[in-house]
Length: 253
Image (tube, rainbow, N blue to C red):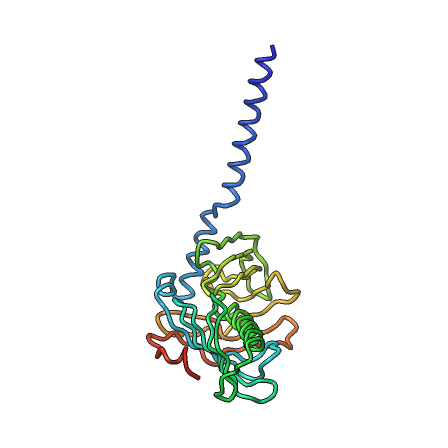
């Protein structure tokens, strides 16, 4: 009798474990509809292969809140090495160039072409510049959010905005190609695959997205983001994928 009871309990435990495993697998595996939508997202951005093959990017950004700079911010980024160059104007009206690496956090700061020799201030500026880069890259490169092996997504349903119906998708990428975490909700035109709204999970507000442009290397990215409060506007006057960048751009002001 006791042996039968033990066998029954073991059978129940095995059955329960199988249910748990199947449930987890079901949660992790996208549906056919979700896979189709992911393909359309990549097609709208110019294709996964084109994105993976592109190495150098030049872009500028105007708008948003940044503590140490004012006006238009300019970046050069080597996606392969993580090297980045930032050019801008400080709130004290000084020209600033930051040469840094988004993966290591190491770099050099120049004010009016003169190297800053204070290690602590240099470290603080590099940290702020890296965060500024992440903020600006999150928006411009949003259509590539599914890149890498740490991205997950789920279709939540559909929503009518004005006269247009969008597919609403929860997305998260714990490590993007620009070394950042992105999470939130996107509104996608299921016909074109273009993202029209973005609601980041770490913010109470969202953005309407537009002005998609061909930036080279077959890629197409959005360059205008308007806050849902209609007072916030972030634009990318320059956005280009480059075939080559002189190495000294990442080593000299």
